Each structure stands twice: as structure tokens, then as C-alpha cells.
View 1 (cartoon, helix red, strand yellow):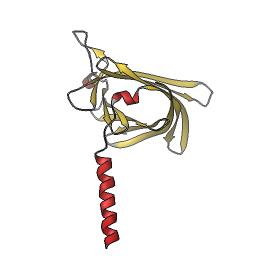
View 2 (spheres, rainbow, N blue to C red):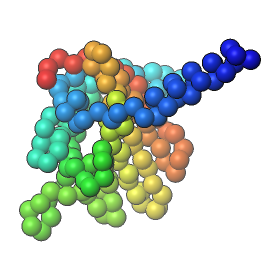
View 3 (cartoon, rainbow, N blue to C red):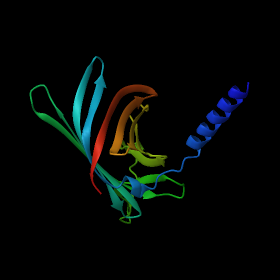
View 4 (tube, rainbow, N blue to C red):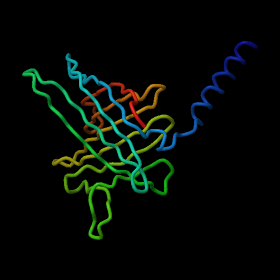
Length: 179
């Protein structure tokens, strides 16, 4: 019985430590990272090259990421994204700053016009970027990018959902090569 009480106490302490772990500051993610990811589609797996740069930007930070995947014919399919994020009144939640409004201020895109609504959150060691799209039939699609700090860089996980159904997962890791 005494062993059981100690075990329960240890489990409660471990759980509370993880629940109340301090969130990282945005600055902790700053740097350039390079690595590889694997796209899981049906029965196949496709490797991709990944480059992520996170750096300070006006009232927040920016995330610039590039991917490259080699097609069957040997050509490389490249994608590139750049988004600035601004602090909000809510701790560790950042709004995107992607388009200029009538006054020249950067603000989030309008999802009712077919653009993604994008925001970021820091929780623990993970910087997550969420992109919600309202698709033509009124349903939604959500893309989620998790970047979790490690001793050598970051682990990467991308998921794409439509109406809550998981359509795709991509996992990988990247090594930090500069601050």
C-alpha cells in the first residue's frame, strides 16, 4: 500500500510539472534550421528537404519556411511561405500580419475571401502555426504546423484536416545551423 501511495504521488508530481511547465519565449525559437521530413500518403512515404528561419519582426516574429520534394521525373517541387506574427493581448497567441489594410497596417487575411486565417501559439517547447481555410462549399480545412524545440534543433509535424478528418501527416526534424 505504501508503494502504491508513493507511486501515485510521483505520477501526480510528474503530471503537474508537465501541466505547469513554462512556455518558451518567441526568442527561444529564433534561428535557421535545416532538415528532412517524411510525407505519409497511403502506402507510400515521400522525403522532403526543409528549411525554417524564425527571426524577430516588428512587434513579434516571422516564420519563413521552404520545402523541396523530388518528383518521380527528377524535378524538384518547391514551396515557400513567409508570415509575420504580432503579439496579441493574449499570452503566447500571435496574429498573422499578412496583408495591408486601408491605413497601411499589416493584418490577418480574410477567410471569407478564400484566404487562410493564420495565427500562432507557443505552448511549452512548441511553436504552432494554424491556418484555417473556408473552402468553396463552406466546409473548413485546417493546416497545423508544430515546431518543437530539441537539444539540436526542432522536431516538425504538419497535419492537414478537413471537417476534422485527418488527410495528411508530415513528420521530420531540423538541425539549428545559426541564430
